[in-house]
Length: 109
Image 1 (cartoon, helix red, strand yellow):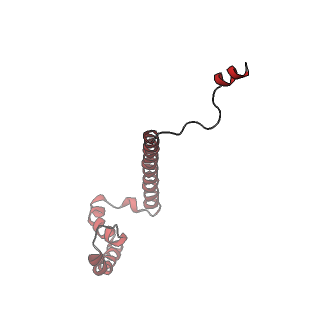
Image 2 (tube, one colour; image 1 turned 60 degrees about the vertical axis):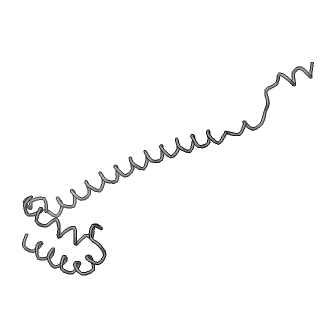
Image 3 (cartoon, one colour; image 1 turned 135 degrees about the vertical axis):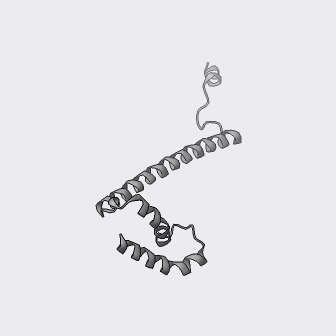
């Protein structure tokens, strides 16, 4: 009887090793989940940044400046902030000029 119970007993211990295809599928599911999480976090951070910028503009009373004036000043603001759209050689020579123009524009406003 002890021999029969040994053959009917389920094996104990570690589960069988996952095949390479199963491991790849699991890694792909994890990667998709992480990408979705990253996308969600980037979207949340962008929304927080937009809200913070709008709050700053309101607190400095810059929201009363007409749109046309903002449209004129945006290129100067981009140059002053350095949004990365300029090449490094352009940025080196144009930084001081942009800072002077932005200062003059702020005084004019």
